[in-house]
Length: 297
Length: 249
Figure 1 (cartoon, rainbow over the protein chains, first blue to last red):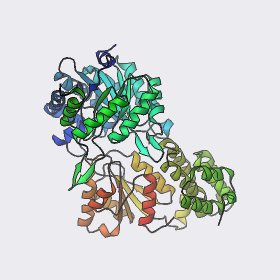
Figure 2 (cartoon, chains in turn blue, green):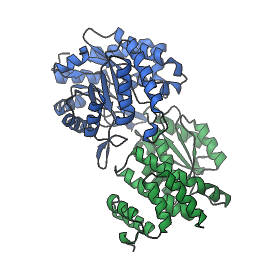
Figure 3 (cartoon, helix red, strand yellow):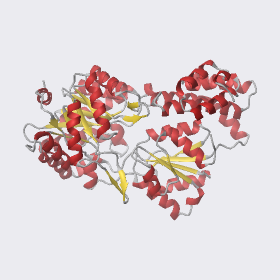
Figure 4 (tube, chains in turn yellow, cyan):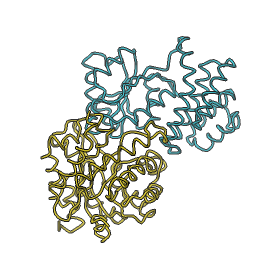
């Protein structure tokens, strides 16, 4: 068993990091810019981000590779740099990771919909795209891969899990994005937290979970429902609420203290690894650590 | 007033009964479907079940037997999409099903569009759609476009990463009266306001109505940036578009 899964299996609640995009925007990423380009052009920012999270008490950080698939990088003219930018993402986080901490290689959605789900993407091609990214991350020394913000459990996400498993020996974390609609919590493709957790377990994910999309109150419901449907460890990265505009600026409303307090309920609902998504930063992680571990970072 | 039993198509009757819960919408759809010819309701049923080959064949057959293109579109294709939109909004169906329905709609519209344009029949309105500068996420925008087309709008799709100039040029080139902008990222959201400002600077703001949407966009934000309307989802986008061009129902 990998050190990462072993550590979870010991029963401690682990604390992940906060947002990557939010941090990069505060550190020079232009609106609409390519975040992964920072791995080669501004490595000090990427290392600094990982350091900031580790020193706030994160047990793990995610790599700056969310949009590191060929589909996404090609939109910025970097389609031929998949291996390089993903490897750098892993290496940069690894280079500042303290002993005993972990680096999760982030894989986000391709932005495509598979033909079998009514879109246009070819599943063999998409499988190859995920393999390519996973190999880059593995070369960069990550401890696990975190496939996140996904909407299509049985299509894109299952394909990604298989691609990572087939091309690396790394454990796979797989998390989905839910939305609350008139009939409850669903992915864009119509899965419930229960059906998604079952499908992810079936697809071979080592850790399942949810991230982004909803505020922490709804996330507690998602995690509780997933816990009923799977015996796999559960990871969640939660947004700092739903963003709103104040004086022309985008503001995420949920404070570190508020989120930390709510994180106790997320853990009680069944989460084994907790962290932040959009709008969270090192100060949120510090509050999580303080609340869940009584201040002992 | 028409009753559910007056709908001359078993499948559609059951669909309305099962999925349309709001009283006003139910009454409106029963009225619509009970007045539609049975052979056009079969087209609607093909749309609702995402059977594109049937939608294609039934549309051709309806035109061949002399039903007017506009009637085939309104009472067949668009009538079918109306139910699809409601089922989607209410979480009875999701993106894959909507995409299948939209494909069926398109299979029928292929036969209608040339006839309408040849006979000079205008669409409800011309809509320019795009994601704003810097934003590459187009799944939501594409859904809106499908449903807008499904409701009888002509849509000019500018794709992703659309600059203010591209929006303005397209409005002028196509003589459009509606603009729809979307953003998925909080970082690109402010570009919606900048695009609206560019319309003002170019002195064309009053020529169009502008609607906005996207996951992080809120009605408050839409107001603040000076948009004419906000839609929370693809179904609302159609409702908003109809309201902006003065079409009811």
